[in-house]
Amino acid sequence: AQQPLPLASLSEHQVAALLRGIGLGKYAEACLRVPLRGRDLLLCTPEDLEAAGVSFRPHRLSLLEEAARLAEEGVPPSLLADAGSDHAGSELSSTSTEYSSWLREAQRKLREPPPQQRGGGGGGSASAAGGGGGGNGSASA
Image 1 (cartoon, one colour):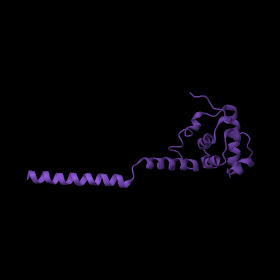
Image 2 (cartoon, rainbow, N blue to C red):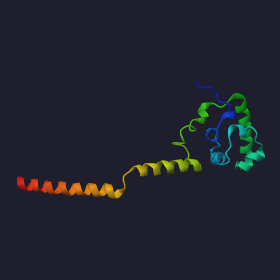
Image 3 (tube, helix red, strand yellow):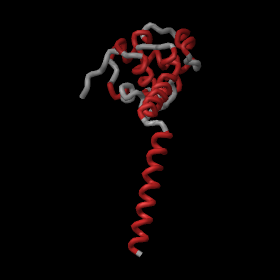
Image 4 (cartoon, rainbow, N blue to C red):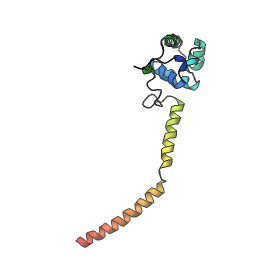
């Protein structure tokens, strides 16, 4: 069993994962945009959370209660399950996650040869093979 982490040590990505873990995932994007880290969460007032994008007052109060509890007990690593995976398989709500996905796709495309090189080379050998195949077919008949 992994040890609980100090709330103050959490990054904004871990705080976003924590919000998802406690049922307040709709505010994860706002947490990343601010960015709201664990040590910042410890200092927040309801007004700070409202300014950060937690619009519903009961959610602000619940989050502050949960933060106070986690500050004492530590954060169970199970609540941060998607924080280290670059959000693979989780909500793609943050701009940084969308950018990371776009960047990986762009890098993959850059590693591929340009279409004219792939199509041109393959087409030439297909014609040669087709001609040779046809000749073999005629010789057999």
